[in-house]
Length: 151
Image (cartoon, rainbow, N blue to C red; front, top):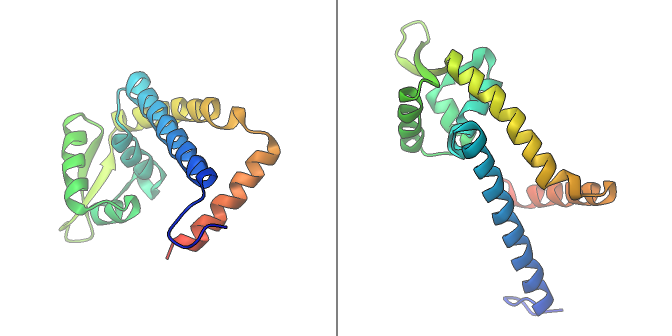
């Protein structure tokens, strides 16, 4: 067993292999969204989050919290997506002062198509190569990691 602050060569090898696999998977999934749907991963994240929200809209601060993005990043992303016709700003609350964001008809069409494309690519690049035992081991390990790291 390695002492604190070090890893065995086999551990470094596994870590490097996992990091490379993650990068390649992310790259291919991002390429699929861009090539097949004409949207970025960031746009997909916003669209899916709004798609899952009640009424297909939410307050901008809720969107920011849900995505774990800085408010300035959300604001810039929403401006670009509004210009593309995917989202529209909506009044929230009785006085209409809280900023909301909702999906347009184009945004709904785009997210429905992107969800299908993305799911197909996830299946092709991730699930199709896993045995049921590997799937369960990956699920278990992922849950353990989340429990250790997430506050």
